[in-house]
Length: 244
Image 1: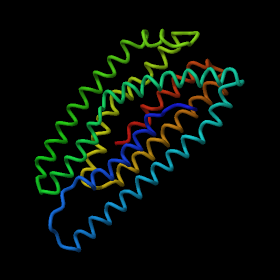
Image 2 (image 1 turned 45 degrees about the horizontal axis):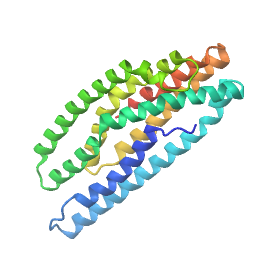
Image 3 (image 1 turned 45 degrees about the vertical axis):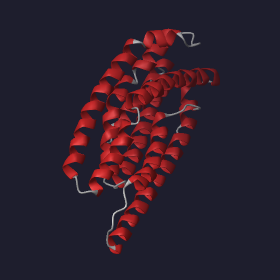
Image 4 (image 1 turned 90 degrees about the horizontal axis):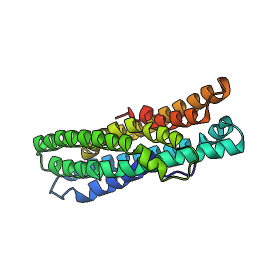
């Protein structure tokens, strides 16, 4: 729908992390068999992440067609799309500030410590990252909820209250996504990309299913308000995020 979807952006960042982790793990003399095994594991992980990214892109394109149609006539659908984009744009900004690249850094540092057999240090780093991201997620959610009215007033929307509802519907996702990103970084630090890839695919599937089901029930079955359908569409980010 013409929005810079943070869920897609995180997929691309994780793909980059696969390469960075591989580059920053220091080279140590190891038997050829182990090196080959590590390389195979990295190649498999890259394949999983590429597949997850492709599937997420496809799902992100396909749901737009029924979403637009069920919203109503073209004018209402365009207004709904604009409202959706406004909410997601502010959400993307706050999410970027809240995460600040910490999960990727933790993944690389864990790979560094694991390569040296310092597993306890890696686990301590992971626990510290969970605490930090939990705190920043909660703080980011509070700020987004608090300043939703001021943010809405800076938009060209006709109804500021509808913008406030849309922005605040994304607060739950903003609270939990930083923590979930650290959990995904934990698996990446162990060069196990399959759990992260499967999590991303499941996230997109749940998100799209909830979004389309909500819009269909609200707009087609009940003939409900467009703003309510949009807020459920943005709230779908939280439904899909429960896939660590």
